[in-house]
Length: 192
Image (tube, rainbow, N blue to C red; front, side):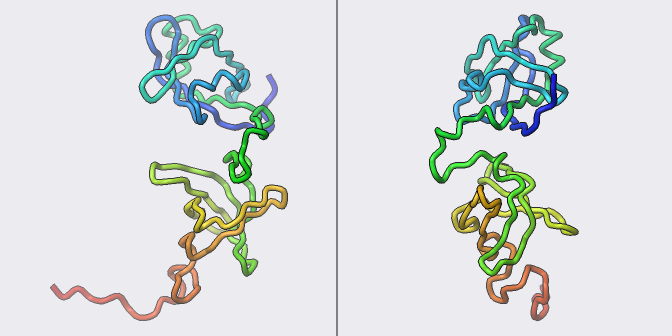
């Protein structure tokens, strides 16, 4: 099978469920039961997976794929990431202020003064809200909150994101300088 041009991660296969080839699957879709509506899923190595049956379970869905008929075959899939092409995702169902994370990756990030902060290299959610990872040439990656206060405007057609560097935690509010650059004074000493 050909390699995916613009893959979007849809799910990760977990442990086997029972003896008949079913697996537990963590989905990244708004509705976990809709995983089968995106067509065939593909792995990074080009294998194609067709969902024959899907049912809800606690925090995951239980899936039966065509050709996976016993527990040994199901166990071999543990940890496998499943993708679809970006083109398979419906754009017409998105509201004006909704985006697929895959569409944000690669956008260049600027502030109102035109200062460049790098490009979006990833979007993460570690449980406390979405974060954008920015990476500039010769710079270490930084994470900023993906919030209305920090991200002011997203221009997909122009390939740009406008941010408030103070709300994003990239500049000190008092001095307008990046954190750690030219801090005044020394921190108070603890004499206890």
